[in-house]
Image (cartoon, rainbow, N blue to C red):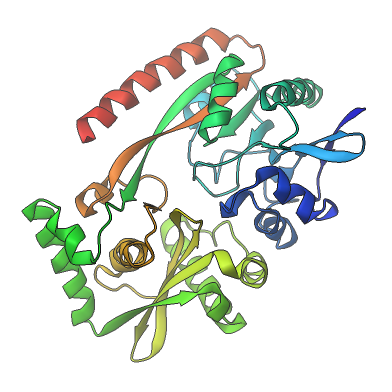
Length: 371
């Protein structure tokens, strides 16, 4: 017997059962990562991210799952749909709520659909997609989105007739370098000189950047880093950011083996840090915080220290976060990322399909100019 349910509290689902479905060390689909967002108050009531995780049971056993949220805005997604939302508003149509299969505040490609090895993924997705469509209708959602899915799910969703949108991100690739100097030697002279100059500028300020494994991080570190993170968001956006200190503490407690931090010290005092996660083959740069402005320190903590770490640990990719064409000057290369959409019927249905097609063409042209 098959039963499909929606879950608004992932802590009620066994971590072992959930993680078994995804069968990967990619950190962001892990039970502990998502539960920390919920229990720490980064998602849930008042955040505009309401958990609606989709679970499929066969004879009482969990055999498929999708992390899903009812969204009341479009913040924290990164493959942004503001233009479509504005079109709805212009035509006096309600764009929110919408259903979103994604990892909150995490624009990294990866699994969005966990399924037991005994099941047929395409068949199971068909059942879940039907349940999503029913939920979309019940809640009068304008659309269902799946952002940054991995390649197997991309193929399934494309075959299901969903609209597709593109995004361009930037990634560093490790070509079997033995040292940072080998990476520099592979770059054109102009880029090589710029990177060397920026690293020297950090050192000239008396700043020392150290690597810390997650197991080394104390509650005092998380308290300070939360302050840095909130201060940085206040300067940039006028709010404290998406993540609460409580979520960060839970990550530090429950996901230490997946966490890497590059911390900057001035006169032995912590002044800035970048928080990364890792899998076997990829380092993911995610969050940055600094209380004061230091010349080129962001580039050192968020890019160069991560490249050093990948080389030393034979990690093949470094995903340093969303957007940022300035990464091209620092040895990163463009990559295409994707999102998939099912819109409820509306007067804008044809216009949205046309918009997605034209946007794809424009982004592909832009991508080709950067390669």
